Image 1 (tube, rainbow, N blue to C red):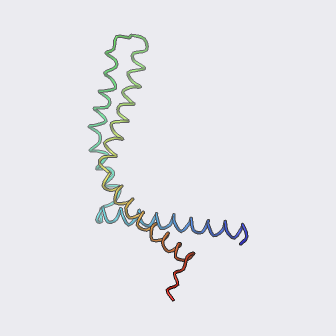
Image 2: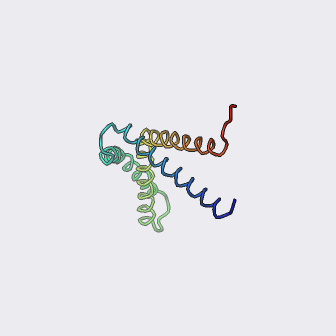
Length: 128
Protein backbone atom coordinates (compact mmCIF):
# COMPACT_ATOMS: atom_id res chain seq x y z
CA UNK A 1 0.00 0.00 0.00
CA UNK A 2 1.43 3.37 -0.97
CA UNK A 3 2.14 6.07 1.57
CA UNK A 4 -0.24 8.50 -0.16
CA UNK A 5 -3.09 5.99 -0.01
CA UNK A 6 -2.34 5.23 3.63
CA UNK A 7 -2.28 8.92 4.58
CA UNK A 8 -5.47 9.51 2.61
CA UNK A 9 -7.19 6.67 4.47
CA UNK A 10 -6.05 8.04 7.84
CA UNK A 11 -7.23 11.52 6.86
CA UNK A 12 -10.67 10.22 5.86
CA UNK A 13 -10.92 8.22 9.09
CA UNK A 14 -9.99 11.32 11.08
CA UNK A 15 -12.64 13.38 9.29
CA UNK A 16 -15.20 10.68 10.04
CA UNK A 17 -14.23 10.67 13.73
CA UNK A 18 -14.49 14.46 13.96
CA UNK A 19 -17.85 14.50 12.20
CA UNK A 20 -19.25 11.80 14.47
CA UNK A 21 -17.96 13.63 17.54
CA UNK A 22 -19.57 16.88 16.40
CA UNK A 23 -22.85 15.06 15.77
CA UNK A 24 -22.66 13.56 19.25
CA UNK A 25 -22.07 16.99 20.77
CA UNK A 26 -25.14 18.36 18.98
CA UNK A 27 -27.27 15.38 20.04
CA UNK A 28 -26.05 15.62 23.63
CA UNK A 29 -26.84 19.31 23.90
CA UNK A 30 -30.27 18.85 22.31
CA UNK A 31 -31.17 16.00 24.64
CA UNK A 32 -30.04 17.95 27.71
CA UNK A 33 -31.69 21.24 26.73
CA UNK A 34 -34.99 19.59 25.73
CA UNK A 35 -35.90 22.21 23.14
CA UNK A 36 -34.54 25.27 24.95
CA UNK A 37 -32.03 27.35 23.01
CA UNK A 38 -28.40 26.96 24.02
CA UNK A 39 -27.95 30.72 24.34
CA UNK A 40 -30.70 30.90 26.96
CA UNK A 41 -29.12 28.16 29.05
CA UNK A 42 -25.66 29.73 28.82
CA UNK A 43 -26.90 33.22 29.68
CA UNK A 44 -28.80 31.82 32.67
CA UNK A 45 -25.61 30.15 33.88
CA UNK A 46 -23.63 33.34 33.31
CA UNK A 47 -26.11 35.39 35.36
CA UNK A 48 -25.96 32.83 38.16
CA UNK A 49 -22.15 33.08 38.11
CA UNK A 50 -22.00 36.86 38.62
CA UNK A 51 -22.22 36.73 42.45
CA UNK A 52 -19.16 34.50 42.47
CA UNK A 53 -17.34 37.02 40.30
CA UNK A 54 -18.21 39.69 42.87
CA UNK A 55 -16.80 37.48 45.62
CA UNK A 56 -13.66 37.08 43.54
CA UNK A 57 -13.35 40.85 43.19
CA UNK A 58 -13.63 41.21 46.95
CA UNK A 59 -11.05 38.53 47.57
CA UNK A 60 -8.69 40.14 45.09
CA UNK A 61 -9.11 43.59 46.57
CA UNK A 62 -8.28 42.32 50.05
CA UNK A 63 -4.62 42.54 49.17
CA UNK A 64 -5.01 46.34 49.20
CA UNK A 65 -5.01 46.13 52.98
CA UNK A 66 -1.57 44.59 53.08
CA UNK A 67 1.19 46.61 54.71
CA UNK A 68 3.00 47.54 51.48
CA UNK A 69 2.17 50.93 49.99
CA UNK A 70 4.06 50.75 46.69
CA UNK A 71 1.85 50.27 43.62
CA UNK A 72 -1.14 49.48 45.83
CA UNK A 73 -3.79 50.73 43.37
CA UNK A 74 -2.38 48.93 40.34
CA UNK A 75 -1.91 45.66 42.19
CA UNK A 76 -5.36 45.93 43.76
CA UNK A 77 -7.02 46.41 40.38
CA UNK A 78 -5.07 43.52 38.87
CA UNK A 79 -5.87 41.24 41.80
CA UNK A 80 -9.53 42.26 41.67
CA UNK A 81 -9.71 41.50 37.97
CA UNK A 82 -7.99 38.15 38.45
CA UNK A 83 -10.33 37.28 41.32
CA UNK A 84 -13.39 38.19 39.29
CA UNK A 85 -12.20 36.11 36.35
CA UNK A 86 -11.41 33.07 38.46
CA UNK A 87 -14.68 33.34 40.40
CA UNK A 88 -16.79 33.70 37.28
CA UNK A 89 -15.08 30.89 35.35
CA UNK A 90 -15.23 28.50 38.29
CA UNK A 91 -18.93 29.15 38.87
CA UNK A 92 -19.78 29.05 35.15
CA UNK A 93 -17.97 25.75 34.75
CA UNK A 94 -19.84 24.33 37.72
CA UNK A 95 -23.23 25.55 36.46
CA UNK A 96 -22.73 24.07 32.99
CA UNK A 97 -21.16 20.76 34.06
CA UNK A 98 -24.31 18.71 33.34
CA UNK A 99 -24.58 20.14 29.83
CA UNK A 100 -20.90 19.51 29.14
CA UNK A 101 -21.18 15.98 30.51
CA UNK A 102 -24.15 15.18 28.30
CA UNK A 103 -22.36 16.53 25.26
CA UNK A 104 -19.16 14.60 26.03
CA UNK A 105 -21.03 11.37 26.71
CA UNK A 106 -22.90 11.43 23.40
CA UNK A 107 -19.77 12.46 21.50
CA UNK A 108 -17.82 9.53 22.93
CA UNK A 109 -20.67 7.15 22.17
CA UNK A 110 -20.68 8.22 18.50
CA UNK A 111 -16.88 8.12 18.24
CA UNK A 112 -16.81 4.62 19.75
CA UNK A 113 -19.35 3.45 17.19
CA UNK A 114 -17.22 4.78 14.32
CA UNK A 115 -14.04 3.28 15.82
CA UNK A 116 -15.71 -0.11 16.17
CA UNK A 117 -16.94 -0.01 12.58
CA UNK A 118 -13.46 0.95 11.39
CA UNK A 119 -11.87 -1.90 13.34
CA UNK A 120 -14.36 -4.41 11.92
CA UNK A 121 -13.67 -3.08 8.44
CA UNK A 122 -9.95 -3.72 8.87
CA UNK A 123 -10.35 -6.98 10.82
CA UNK A 124 -13.32 -8.85 9.38
CA UNK A 125 -14.64 -11.67 11.48
CA UNK A 126 -14.98 -14.93 9.57
CA UNK A 127 -17.18 -17.40 11.46
CA UNK A 128 -17.03 -20.09 8.81
